[in-house]
Image 1: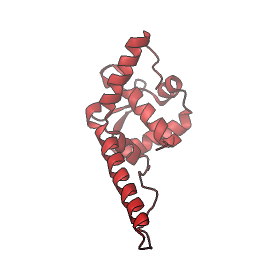
Image 2 (image 1 turned 135 degrees about the horizontal axis):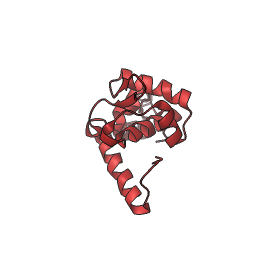
Image 3 (image 1 turned 180 degrees about the vertical axis):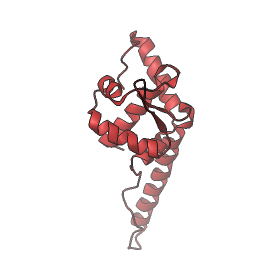
Length: 147
C-alpha cells in the first residue's frame, strides 16, 4: 500500500501533535516548519481532521491545534478516513467469469483488504509516539522531531 500525500502529511501532523508537551496546542506554522510541510495544505488537512473529531482548534495567541483525545484512542485508519482516504482492494466487483482462478484471486484481494484494514485500525498514534521516542533516544535527538 502506498500512502498518498494527504495521508502521509496527516499522519505526520498528528504524530507531531502527540509529541507536544501535555498534548498542548501547536500552530499550523510550527507543525509545518518542524515537519517540512506546506502550511496552507496542512491547514486544509487539519480542518478536515478537526471535523472528524480527532483534533480540536484553540483560538488565540497561544492557540493552534491539539489532539481531541489520548493518542492511544486515535488509529491510523481513523486518520486516513478523516481525510477521505479509502483502503480498497484492487478489484471492486466480483469476477464475471466462472473460472476458479478469477474467484480465488478476488477472494485473495478481499482477505488482504480485511487484514490491511485491521492493521490500520489497530495501530495508534501512541504506538507511533513510542516508536518516535525510541528513535530519538537511539540517535540522541530531543527537539524538532521530523516524522
